Image 1 (cartoon, rainbow, N blue to C red):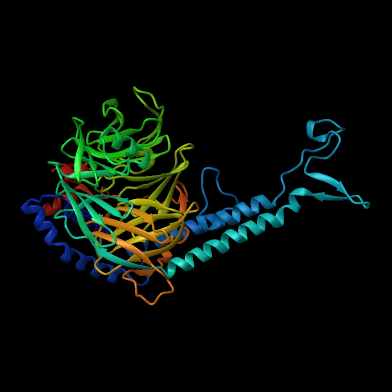
Image 2 (image 1 turned 90 degrees about the horizontal axis):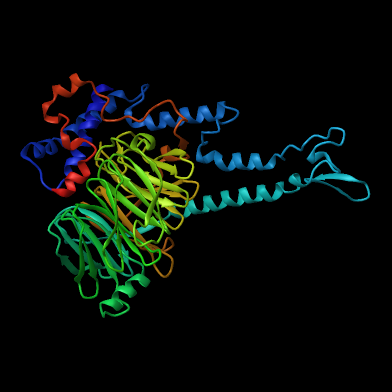
Length: 548
């Protein structure tokens, strides 16, 4: 088992090296050993198979242990959440049991005066007592059954899903960010360019060159704010704009129709994340490589606020109405409220350090987040997605890979779907796992032969309601959903990983802790100088890769 874990760690380091911009000869040598290490790992796993548990089955072992704990415990601890498969049953069971009524004692007590309680009433000549809570039972049961039927139907439809894939070839380095606007896909790369693609024809429409450093983030302001800027620039009111952030410390605003930069904001810091806040006059919020969060006016493009919010690079910023969510390389998460003021528009509501979120020290040091109401979904380079209720601070864990060798790079929501990317370090297989919202119940997984590692994802729907996605990483790929009843064959393989069924659990549900890359003895680390821990394998590797 010790050698298996060491091999998994080496493959994890190689995976991080492969997404760097430039490599030293020593790093290239490490990458050249990937096939050899994978072969050795497969051999060890085969030897350990049979009566013993292999590392690849560890997720299954945790699942069984978790199930036993839930089934053997008559009542869950209040701070714990049962698996997703039991949520509906537990809700139904709770709602079916009528609340206890207050006891009558000689006519005293607020609930004992006059009648036994508001939930019981006298009906008919016979004077039979009818419990109103019991009368509501069929409705609750019917609702639960209806939800189960809807989920079963949704799962069956996704198991028949077909997608046509089209490669958008043009970048000469890794794609770090993507957004979709109408029939256009805009991609940013570490090759310093922003490219505009016409989706129906899968052709490059424009190459927006202007950054001197790698492009790290993109966002698209809503049409009403684009119209406002277009009017001030004497452009068509149908003009759409794209914001790009770069390691060159600039945020550039591009007019898509003319393919030109209409405004450049110098931030004094390498920009690693950004978003647009469509509240009031509008704000641009940026995150830097040093953990700074800044707000910029959409009217004047002047800096309104600058806060040293995180201890490491800000790797993800997302807006949801007046709220802004920021995540950093060390695993910290902050929630901000926009007060629509000219100065200091952002007020921090909550903050969790990496130690509290459990996302600190993850490989690659890159946290990706996606908010939904009171919930924030976190991807941080492990085989799990974290689920944070930012109002209560309750953390849950959603299994995204059945082996500890899985890496989750990004998380995304579209409609009622939660999509988590997953990359298997042991065999190089890449998949997209689909979960239904809000219960986070696993639906299916999508992959295709030789699928590359997926680092970013954007989505939209066609006029007929079909899904279109675009994924970026080593390749830029457009996914177009095909009618499931048609004869055309899809390019995507759809399969179910039963190790992911119903594994939403609270942080305290199992005693087994997540395996990290820091578990090896110092003596073991020194034995293989070819894979010694380096500064770049720490929490800041993502930002350093971007900034090279």
